[in-house]
Length: 196
Image (cartoon, rainbow, N blue to C red; front, side, top):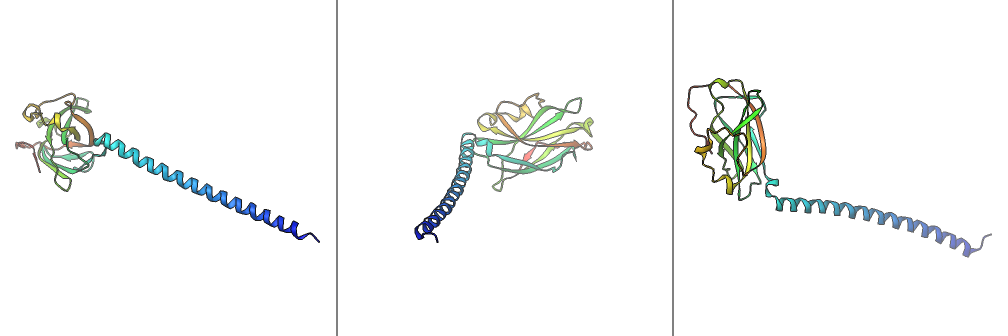
């Protein structure tokens, strides 16, 4: 028969080992959870700093109509979409890039700055896409966020019919693009683009 004190000591050591392993497992779980929380918090903080330093990074805009690439658009059409995150000091601009002789994106022509409604929707009507002989050719409808201090000084009459190899200063980032195909030409004059 074993002495009582030796048996009790053995049980105490087993309990101590069991308790120690559970404590270390618990500490490990807590450290892992703390690491995950720090990573998520740091990610949120760095995102906030990036947006604070660069407000255009949070601007999102889309061309919703026409809604698919390759869609045929008439000579005179309307274009619409949505925008969010546009802050003071920035404007949304609608631009068309016309094809070069190889049917690839070529020169730009500015259409209009696009004011947005309270719900973030925008529409440009009287959009002229190409001239008479350009039926079937590709064009690229594009949205840009711009620096209002620079682009608000642009005189549209100087740019509306101008073909530019590059966009003027102040066009900061392209937000969306829709490639379209020009449909049949009509004799009607589309008029000046209007926004609503």
